[in-house]
Length: 547
Image 1 (cartoon, one colour):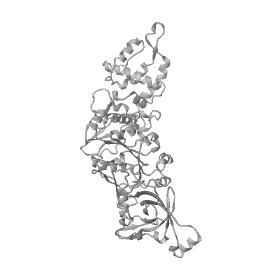
Image 2: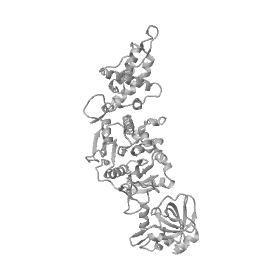
Image 3: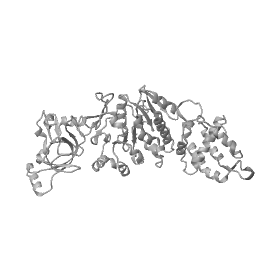
Image 4: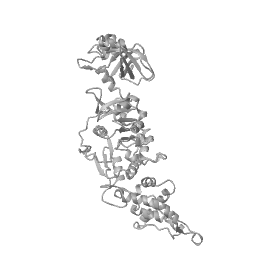
């Protein structure tokens, strides 16, 4: 590919900068012809600002056309240079530019990753014109996704944002390139994180892609008026059957320790399941004074369908589990053990505190009640070819653990329910740090979000997560994320948590980003992209009240 084919309207010499003078593995340097070459100018429709950085250049090489980005501009500080500048003799000053090579065009119509190839000494360097910039933008995706054959590419998410350093240039991308390895949006409060998320969701929905939205604050409650959306408010018109929650999830919710509390909690729930089966759910199952064989027979009579229980009786039932085998004539009977009763009192206090000081009881049902089962709604969502689902979870407290357990249950349920033949969808979880604080990093396989991150792609479940506190997101979840959209961050802890995804220059840049500006980093892109998001026209309740 010849550089002349891109400079057909204006002579390429008007864009000439200089030659490659130094080549390193990580970067290269350009010896500029003279200082006057770096003056700002406008040629027809082309505006050139070569005296700054972050613009694109093209390098003509016998291997093809390399495209790079200027990251450094420098003039030597010595008496000769200073005197030449003072006398206006700019042709005697030879600046130096540092560039990062991004891509290579060779025997193709698009730029590819350069691999082991790089530029050579004495290669000529030009400012990239609009034709080259457009070709580069079309080449940003390293993988192209096709549907039903090579001649039918996946429809783009069009004009998702504006490229920050290219005036009037919109950024578009294929959905799989953005979500294939899941997407995490990061940014401090008021950095534009929610605005960019809604802009992406808007484009996703316009493309006919199914979405499941979990909204912890209610700020998206009026954002999706489409008839294809089913809107639920958890704890008001939608509830969760107690029998559908696993023992591990109850342990997570009540923060049972790993010693004996988990086993006692499981025994108490099993006893209450028997009471529900026998129609005695208003009473606890008393074991003190009962024959061991009779109690065991009762518990063994439960089958897989006997899962519901009266949650309100759980504290009393935990107390009733404080028994042991008797001695002597009572060796076949259970008798009360005061030591166990004292030990179990800590678990009873946890359960009662959860019930009394949160909206905990509003989210669970044991019998028919006005409202819908959350799991039934998830079934309908998975079976629907085009229907989307919005779940308002704003009634769930931030720190009571219910949200973590609900998201964990939803995630695990979806990964089991979604088959390879079902239509793929995007699972959007806003402020995900609210739901990951209770993830057990010693047993990550039990976490629903981590299961989706690991296995979801194969079953068509793609995560779209946001957080203002990346340091609270478990590292094991980070390791499964392939695309980051990073807005302004100022906390050192937060910057350290994403350090492996950024070079030193990008870290410094993130601290100074304006509202709505972000860096898009992805394994599916040639390089990091600087974007400016335009607010969606959808209703969004994210205004900050004025004092």
